[in-house]
Length: 154
Image (cartoon, rainbow, N blue to C red; front, side, top):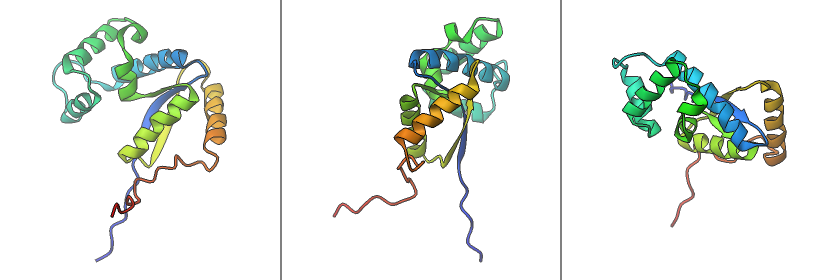
C-alpha cells in the first residue's frame, strides 16, 4: 500500500501591518467586518462549521449575532468589533506584532499563511511587512517547526 502524502495546512487571513499598531487594528476591524458580513449566514440557522468557528474564537454566539446585525444595518465595524474579533479572524498591528501572531498559527499547525493586506495602501503595507520579515527573520522561517518532535527530556 502506498504511503499517504501529508497535506499542508494553509490559513487565509486578512492582515493589517503598520508602524502604528493601533491604526493597523482599526484597518483590520473594517476588513474583518466586511469578511464576516460577506461570509456569515443571516438568521440562526448556522452550519456546524460556523458554530465551531465562533466557539473557538472565544466570542459568544449572541455577541457574534449582535455584531453582525449592527454591521448589516450599516454601523461601522470599527465601532462594533473589539480586539477579540481581530485576534480571532485577522493579523494586525506593527510588523513585529504580526510576526508574533503568525508564530501562534505556526505553533497551532499552520504550514503557510496567505495574507490579504487590508486598507487603503495594501501594497505599501505589504512592503513594510516584508522588510520587517527580512530584517527580523533573515532565513525566512518563523523558526518553529511543529513537525519536529520535541527533544527528549530524559
